[in-house]
Image (tube, rainbow, N blue to C red; front, side, top):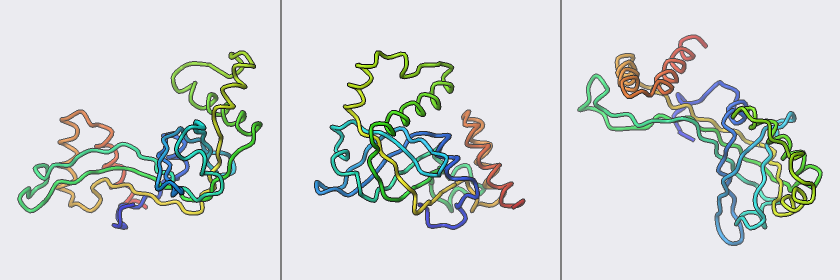
Length: 202
């Protein structure tokens, strides 16, 4: 996470994770550091669950390890030309990210199936569809579940970065907002406005 305390976020980090739903999961294994890329679901108890193919480089080692899940949100490049004094500045990048660190345990078959059902219940409505595992022949569903492993990570540390020009002057921030809007990056412009409003109205 960025070391500048100005870039901490007061927003609910697990809410951010739930909205974005995809993570890079890192762990140190006997084969060296490895990373997996997987959908991530937040449970009612505040843990996060995901599944990996059995052939994934992390799958054989992850049960019992401490892992780090990194969830990235929207971001954009910032040109010094957008500041009031371009010659005195350098390029940077605004971005949003959450890190979850904690022990991981493998799920049993019943918990894995519950995770898969939660996954379709969560993501299908986001694309206007209604697929469920019940639409798959049971032998096929069971064969596919045997090819994957479900996991649960219990966060013992949560770190956030919301880097949205909070450390810049009002003139600089307005320059970045105007440039992003010219480029059609309206979400990035809105994030800067929201971050500055939160700073002045805690």
